[in-house]
Image (cartoon, rainbow, N blue to C red; front, side, top):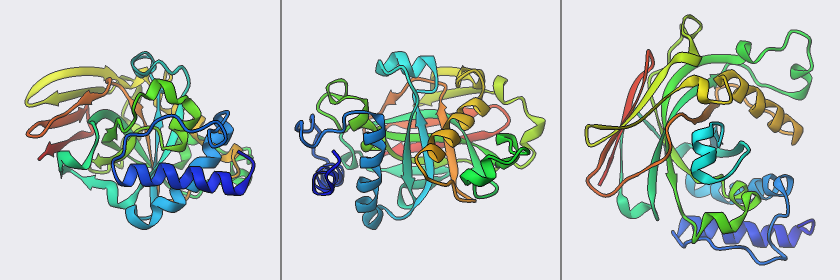
Length: 264
């Protein structure tokens, strides 16, 4: 995947399949990213093509930061993707069922970034992930299983496709988050009023802050900064719940409030 024309061909294929809801199957050997590094590089190409229809990148997601999601997907390591402005909903969202192959939701803690993070700022002695958090929110990631069989694609291709991400619903920003014990926040997912899963912040790599640490290091290692004002979804404390037309889902996180999504 070192050839520019092959990267562009693979990126066009993945972006067109996403836009037109065409189930994504394994890429041909000449187009398939061979490892996570190539997957992230291809993701950059894909997202440049998605930028026009979906808007600029305003946030990020980390998948598989909890053992519950690693078991659920059979993937043992965290994976990051980008989130576009036109896919972000606030508070109580509505989406059409026919806008997805298989729509699901996840229960997450989200942080917004208070200052642009670069390699130079990260290498400063005083750098701390805690100090670059502006606010904390409850978040519902909207995911789409847009794959023929995600297990057959391989992790690098899933990364190139932003690892299932299809958007999110964000809650109100909490400014006094330092008064909260993020590790012990309890998150719940409800579908049509019934609790279908719950988990605590400590499930996220032992601490949500460790997940943010991982993301910052991963991003900077690829020569990319993290702009001020963007947000990071740190991973689901509840396994993905799949929805159908008519379903109403709610994600609640202690002290952070709740958000909801109606599938029409």
